[in-house]
Amino acid sequence: MAPDGIDPSLEQEYALRARYPERESIYARMRGASEDFRARQRGHVELAYGQSARERIDFFPGGREAPLVVFIHGGYWRALDKETFLFLAAPLVAAGFSVAMPGYDLAPGISLAAIEAQIGEALGLLRHRAGELAFDPGRVVLSGHSAGGQLAAMAMLRGSSGLGVRGLFGVSGVYDLLPLVATSVGASIRLDPETAAAASPMRLAGLRAQVPARLAVGADETAGFRGQSHDFARARIEAGGQAIVDEIPGTNHFTVLDRLFEGDGLAWIAARLAAVG
Image (cartoon, rainbow, N blue to C red; front, top):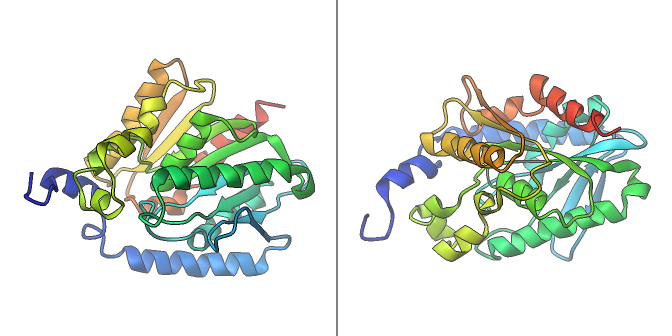
């Protein structure tokens, strides 16, 4: 352990800014694609679920009584915004799904527990306005990338939104936050062992075992991130649930997003929702 409390081995696994200097160019491409998609998408609305500028949801309708996919962005709870990732809705809307992408305030300005509460408020608003927005609140898949995977998993496990969540589609998610405590990431968001444990889906893995999970991760990601998905899937299976992990060849923590809702991923979501009438 370094004098500043950083564990070099964990830092190598979870501190991604130095490992992937190309990420800014990837984000720039994503933002451009997202701006193009939003500009040409009819029926798009932005919904406020709170008072802050980030407490907003981008909603894209897929047709009356369409099933809903909720996607939560990542950024280690401290960076990025929903606007960067709107392009991911394109194949879903084209396939007839409605899509909601909530934003949230960032750490360390607010705690992880407060961010989780904001996601809960966003999902509650969607449930309240399901009739107006014309989606089916009984057929919902929660999804997220990286920190968004943690937020989606916690929302599914707690099950307090009133939505009929039929699947969790996590991508490069963080399901055990304890390893982050001894990293620069943990220091930047003021993470300690108690708050890390409270925010870890792994600690709640036995809840709502009836909700199947598909967990994707880039095959070129660190052992730490690949292990997060495999360990959470194993915990869900041991609790009597269904979970599978896909390591996507030739992708890392950032490029895996390009294949998030394509091909097999889209088919899995459709199958989960078709199974409930």
